[in-house]
Image (cartoon, rainbow, N blue to C red):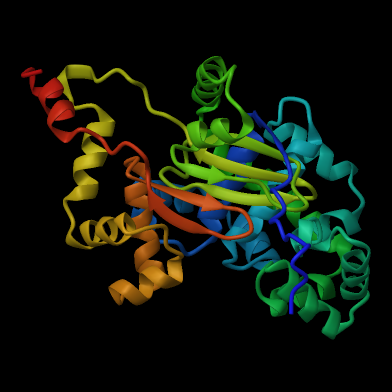
Length: 355
């Protein structure tokens, strides 16, 4: 029987700071993840045309180095986002490359196998990384399971290739990708800087929690053990997706940079289009109805709607981009309706001039 004189209270999530950062180094890694991976090309705002141009621009040397390093594991580049922050300076591609050249080969390999994730920062976590790097297959499997850093087979292949070669290939891939694809095709530094300046001005009196929600357009982050800082980084190339990655005690959230508020030539405001596009689908309407009953995990939504996780991910991204739902991240991940749904009559009337 429980002691009636003792009370059990849930511990509050640990506090964290939040700040806005931008840099072409982040954007280059995000673009590289798109180029490398097998995500549906039409799921990005840039569309299939961007991929066609990027593949045509890529040199055979880039393709060969990329296949030798990671194959088609695009999300693995997310594990390097923290290195852009660690490099400091302007957080641009040149600074990232300089930082990589000066890094120990073991540090680059450790990052690519997930060794800088918070789950591996403890004493036994570091021992696990050391064991995996030493070639222990059980240690490699345990590292993959604990860090959720992807396929144990790829981790094993990277380790077998050796830290020196992995560092050389990483440098070659980023350098060639920047020269062949990124610099000629993704010239958006000014827009990224402008997005941060506008948001920073509006967010001066916001708490860390409010800033995360404001910048991301609907992500709720209450904090979690092992994380004491959140970096909010705008991206244009990966819109409408939001990318989340951890680096030691820092969480990096790459959010979709805002578009210009000006609608030229009588074109409808982008937000108006996004809302009506999101609502013009039966599955997304069913999702909204399900979320109206309360926050849901992805597994619960797949069961309720009878759809695959990959299919639901796409629909949820459309709804979140339109500002209709929010995503709570931390120890658990849930989707829910955003407070204050848009007034459809008002925003349509404002556009057609009947307000």
